Length: 114
Length: 113
Image (cartoon, rainbow over all chains, first blue to last red; front, side, top):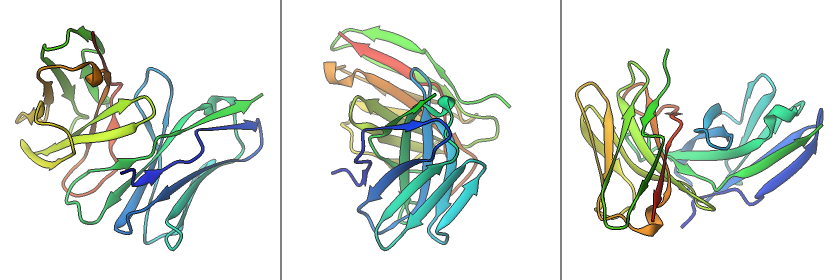
């Protein structure tokens, strides 16, 4: 049972425009969320996190929004650059876990067109 | 600071064999977790170790096992390999007890033939 879903397998965006990647979750006990970027043949690279006490977190060109009532989070990349082309994963963790057990979505492949 | 190091990077095994993968966490990190990535499945949690103790375990059969040493280095073992075990195995480390951002290594690509 996939508790974290990324329903868009792929997304194409023009360079300089905004990229919006979406993630939905089903477990209401998830309260800590991470986004990763992954290039082929490399491990995932951490981008940005958000905990449920916030609804927004920014880091440079990356902003994550959390809508707890909708169980939805999104990652905004502004402006998008060709180097942002990669697969993006969202991950969630439950406050029931004492450690670092994360549930991942299946990823969205972003292509930024020059 | 060196990142998470995984060895070997690539390996090919025959069905029925067993395999051991190694992970050295970021210096000072005491939590090590393992994930399996297969096409279309995202990353699936295998297990997490902290201070040489398994703290969490995912939904994988007993053929998948792991351990952590006193220097926080970790190994995972898969016995009686099946074709479906072909995957990218990722190790991640994080600083301390409790929930934190996890940082991944490059992964070990396992192909079972």
